Length: 382
Image (cartoon, rainbow, N blue to C red; front, top):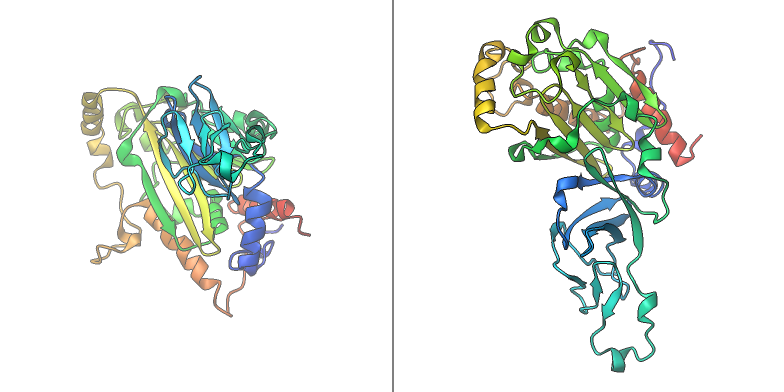
């Protein structure tokens, strides 16, 4: 595609139509590995997490034997959801509707008044429906299909392009867990994430520590990979300039920012590791949950690094515009608020009868074009 050509690979209705959204839920999010949390979220028998994977709600639970198992969150009686969000169910799983009870291995244990109400019930045939579960790079993953191909096969091609971080050795920064509901289609959020062209412009005051002219990016299968080096000033003494203690050696410092299909972004850099989990809620609404891990060192070392790096950062991070409005995202000095603003503005513009796709940047938006092609391929569209 030439740089002066538009980008109408996906039609406007791909970002606004409920029917299109429903097809994506069925054909993409219900058929791929879904992020379910960090490995540390489940560390003892009875602990569980639940996650929406397209049309399927799935929970992971640790059994008394220490094994992780995944099940569809559906009671085999009338389909009521068994578990909510995150918690510890101890030794059994009980449906809140009629108290049908299962063990942590998914077997049906008891049914109230079974002799009178279900005299011929075959308990052995009514265990919970199984899903697939896996650990990969410090994260938990689920797939609706019990016999899904291994997660390593799904991500295998892109793994060499990821950062050198040992995620299991890092610790979660609890205050770094944030949740955003963005009034935009999930693909707009993904496309913003993989758009290299906007980094030096929208984020001129918030991400200037990286050299956006030297981006290396591409696709392995449906997965987008991205790397860029530090800017010269930041790199001159990154051990001193980094805002928090380094999590990789200084000579490897840089930013790996892949987007794993269909919507799991990673932000792997010199002083932190984050997961950017995208969940479509509606054609024009997307939830993003960000979780961050940092070096496993003392509070004193964090405080010391903050002091050491103060001079470098003082006055360096700023909003794109100045404003007296304390709620103006473009004056916030927060790159997430800048991105959210841009995404929501794009979504609004799609409603205008005057909207049409403009030219597409030859290199900086190549990933956006390819992502749209991948979506079309998964939907089986021409």
